[in-house]
Image (cartoon, rainbow, N blue to C red; front, top):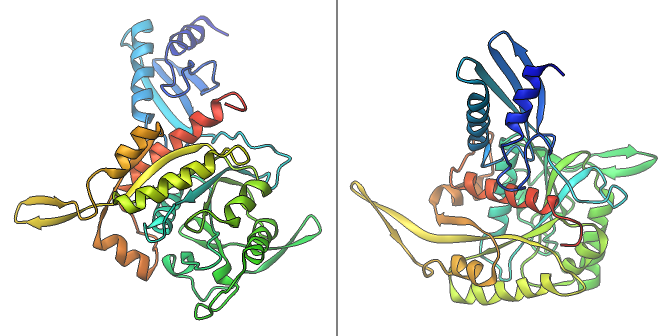
Length: 354
């Protein structure tokens, strides 16, 4: 290693990942370092393509190099992402790095809407994403993605037949709604629903994914127990509205995931339908229809990350009815998705069992 390269790496070893609390060199986040006369080029390897600290870390790298070598060099930093995982390779779905459950204590709080936009936003950032509709009783993902009439194809992998997910907008989707008529009432007893859900987990071939989001049915049911007993889950995202009746059920869901036989890490809470914005000439006046910041206060009280608020928006409702399209982008989900990706990376960096 020549002297200049060593100096650059020494400078970068003083830059720390703000989440993982270790320096970039030790973490292996500096790659492809090239020095061409007065131009220094390298790649910053992030733990997620949705990293909210990307700009801050790049600027810190530039300042560290300039402090060590002066300002006579042009510094070009490219970024890529290598999504981390804490899941066992021997577990079911070994090619899936992270399994994220999206849950709510109460129905009607917009859990499937949140799951849809989290999946879409992660994919728009460049991640490989899947979304499994685990609401056996009332699947809504086919409608929200505009693929109600789609039927899955079959594939043989390692000598076994699997169903293939439907792909939309860079996201792989699967739902029991693809196997039953949208007009058909799905009447299941608990054990039947659990068996159907387990079959979906075992008989769908996802391939390599950075994130598989599982949209769970509301409440606390056999489906939730089947999930944690069948596959290794990275963590859970809770969805609630600010309303007291929704918060009560969110607390129950939280208690379930914290039970000794379950013990799923809670990656964060999303407060949906936080407020309605009506435009009054040049002023935007939020109306707190379901109460104000109930989810935010609950997250603080329970010491879990608060991922953000989603307002009542006609655009979100319209997308839910007509289906996601290639140009669908709701800005409010960007910081929420980045916060989630950040929490996943932090969780994966923890020693096993913490």
